[in-house]
Image (cartoon, rainbow, N blue to C red):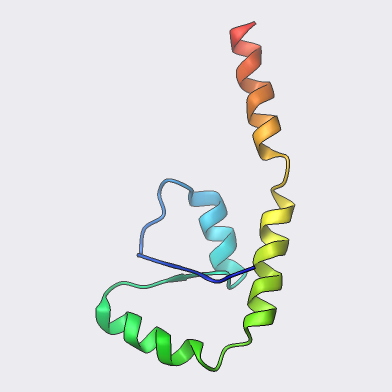
Length: 77
């Protein structure tokens, strides 16, 4: 339920990264100047709304680990 702040790249998790960003739960920060601007911006943001959005985005992906393991086990059997 928290806002995720990170650098401009999320290649290790592109699908969920895009979804979290689209829902306002992930904020990209390119450099120190942008980070300072973000801190000022964040003081006026509705954190409750962003947290709820983040929880919804993650809940929609619930079960993805089980699905991945099931697919992997097909190749191991």
